[in-house]
Amino acid sequence: NDARLVTGVGISVAGFLDRDHSAMVENANLPALCGFPLRRALEERVGHDCRLEVDSNAAVLAEYRFGAGQGASRLLGVTVGTGLGGGVVIDGALLRYTGECAGDVGHIILDPDGRRCSCGARGCLEALVCSAALAERAGTRSAREVITSAQKGEPSAMAAIAHIGSYLGLGLAALSPLFAPDTIVV
Picture: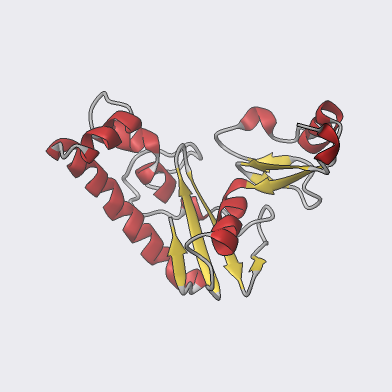
């Protein structure tokens, strides 16, 4: 519990970062944080150097170093929750181009007539597999309740997850020719 042992703080944030990783510059789900000098504010608050990283980059890098992505030459990782983010590691290095990450992989269009996305489009991978889509598919239950019910074998909950899973599979298949992964981690 000795604060002197802390040498820095790493923070993962949803959305695109600026080039020097000092602020989030774009996220349709968190517009209030866009442009806010987050790294500086956190450093002032905690009294240590802080590093910002795109959350999906942090997740895929953790999988590459410690999890199911160990040994992969080309790793595609996706995080699913409120939205869908993705990161790519190629030969041990994060792929960075748009927003200091592999781009907005959750916003490939899978169904032009599909569910409205927070980005304003319809049928984005993110809109079709996010927790809100799962909850809607299962009626009035939360995503957590749907998952718990599916674990207990409830047919309607299992069907809702299977429906979401089919879109996730389709999305991963669509992303694969772009990133040519030898391993995919969800």
